[in-house]
Image 1: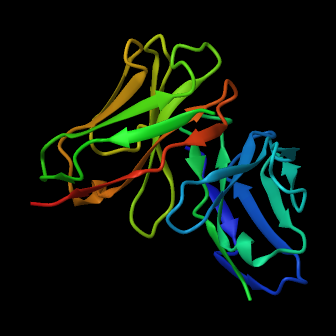
Image 2: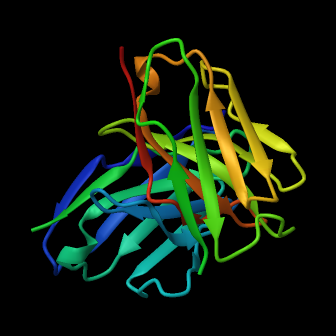
Length: 107
Length: 119
């Protein structure tokens, strides 16, 4: 199965800083990489699909990039409401897999 | 607006079968545009895809799961179900039902159901 490794596991930033989370796949997955946000005691929410495609209703401060094996989720000017755990997810090859998650704290 | 709701026992004994049902409202489970799946999350841990089903009954399972899995669909009730056999404490998790788009992104999630495996 394809292993997705996220870094860092934890990131603490101030509202003026940019959040950058990377996701590395154990083999090429083209652009079939998606990002989810999960707040405490909530279900995950789709933020970005196919590496860089925006989702209706998701603020433009969330953006994604990458292809092949290396992907990045960026949150510009994060706010306290963006404190959450972020997961990458691949749908290139069965079984579908997720990264281990990156917890983001906004100080 | 599509809504998904999990239901089933919150406590299962070791070696028994975990059974959950997902009721779909606001949309038809028979739509040719979507797949329907189960994802779980052990307490304090990450997400694991269990398996998915198409309205026709075609199934896709994660071979990494140690407990045998069966996912079925009941189009007359607009529901799909999960059975996990011979469970152990390692199967304790929040179980989410979800809708996949035709390209497999997960666009809707249920609220999740905590199932504890304990005697």
